[in-house]
Image (cartoon, rainbow, N blue to C red; front, side, top):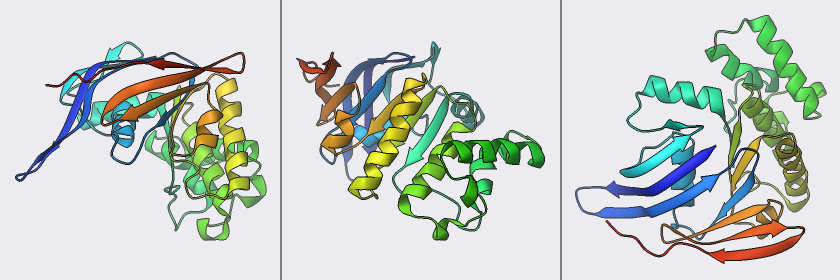
Length: 240
C-alpha cells in the first residue's frame, strides 16, 4: 500500500535550513494498524503530511498503491487524496457554521454528488458513529468525542483505503479517548489501513505496529505478535 525509500525533507528560509526527515525507509501494507510516535520535532507530523499528499518531499520515493507520488499538480494531488485517504485531526477541523450532517457530506459536494444523495449517505455514516440524532446540531453543540466521531464519519464518506489520524485523541479526556480508539480499531478490523500519529502510549498500544521516530529517522519499531511486543532496531543516520 505504502512504500517509502530514502525520503528526505527540509524546510528552508533565508536564515536557515532545517533537515526534518533524514532518509526514511518505510513500508506499510494494506490493512495494517500503525502508530507513529516521537518527541516534538522528530518529524512525525511532517511524515504524515507527506503520506497524505499535503506536503512534498525533497528526495527519495513515495509510492502509494503502486503510484509514484512526486511532482503532482494540485489537481492530481487532490484526486489521489479524495480517492485514497481520509483525514482525522486533533482539532476536528469541522466548519462551525455547518451542522454535523453538512460537515460529513462536504467531501461529496466536491465530488458533484447531489444534495439529496450526499445527505442520505452522510446520515448513514453518522448513524454508524451513533450520532444520527445529532445530525442537525452545530459543532458548538457537540462534545469533543462527538466532534471527533463526526470528523471520522466525514473521513469515511469517500470510502478511503487509508485513514490518517494526526493526534486524534489529543483534545479528548481519557474516557473519550478510549471510545474514539474503539471506533478507529473497528474500522481497521474492517480492512482500512489506519495510521495514527500520537504522543500517547495508550493510543499507540492499541495499534499493531509502532514506528518510533527520533531526529528525522526511524529509530526502532515495535510489533505485536500474539500479544507480545517485539522491538526491532532499524535505521542509522543517512545524511545528504
